[in-house]
Length: 104
Image 1 (cartoon, helix red, strand yellow):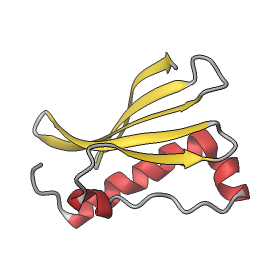
Image 2: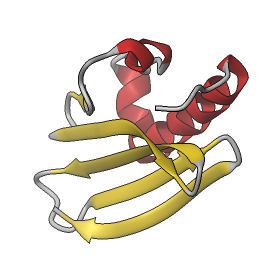
Image 3: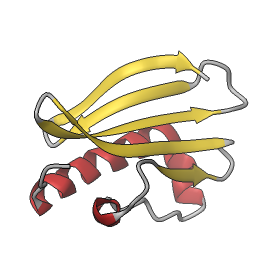
Image 4: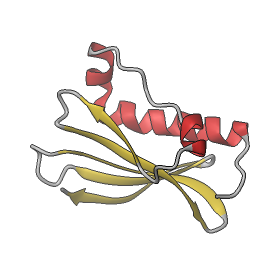
């Protein structure tokens, strides 16, 4: 993985939190969940990480990747009791891009 500046990582984290809140904001607020920080995954041996959301019957899988020579966070989220609820996003310090939806 190429080096990523703290400012870039914080911007990606901001957009990641935006995606989480858009998909599950009511559950996040009602359960007072702390949103995941990205800094710890830089030194992690795990390639993918999981942020479950109680009541959503699913959550967010996420990992860092290099695409087009740019560091991106790829996240997949779904609710397993709602068919077709899956969404995959690519998040960079420039913003959020929906890559795919309708799976799971």
